[in-house]
Length: 285
Image (cartoon, rainbow, N blue to C red; front, side):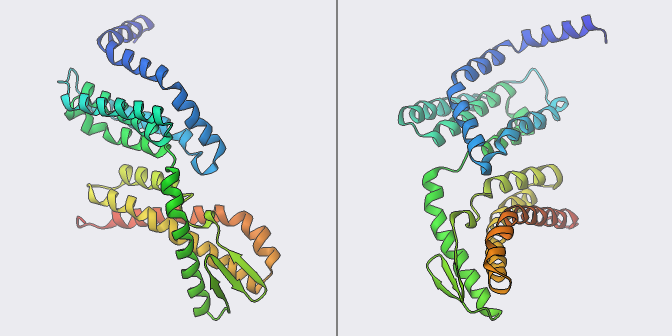
């Protein structure tokens, strides 16, 4: 195909699909403040730096199914309903300065436009591309703050119980484990919530791309939550043993620096192993 043919096909494509592109362009311009604040969160908080990859991956997921889409397609009217709901949420979110509602509404608006334009049959083939966009949104502060302290207490209680089982003397006071010569405080970072969104995104993507059926990807996605929590409990457990058996300096300095990365890698390996097990089973789940 020569350059003239390519240009002609591009112009024909833009002519046929001009209205969706115009709507998407207008939406992008109106959403610049929302996207700017979202990107600032990705830069400021390492736990959400994966957000930079979410949009390119979503675009790729849609691109890989491009040959499966059939046009022209009858518009799905329920897409307009989803679009209107998203617009209302965006207005309310901006008025109330509620970041999560604003960002979620933006994803809903894009989803509604795609559903209406693609039609129901086409949208079923690319729905995951729009669902995956949710993982670029940080957990609402009200949910994060409400869940963090109970998870800290749970992690502390489980770790103290395991230490007592193996014979390490310790006493638990709230979220503090008192060892003979060291007080180990279980902070927010050890609750398992900080890496949860990243692991959920990886679990959802891995399950969608590799697992057959509908139930198995859901099982893998749901399993990322306890995996994140359990691996962070293991991190506290290992830190306590290191402080007791080696030195507090080793636990606070070297081990503390690398434990976050090791825990994330361990959680990712567990997700891969579980995905392999679910894929290996011959009988449907």
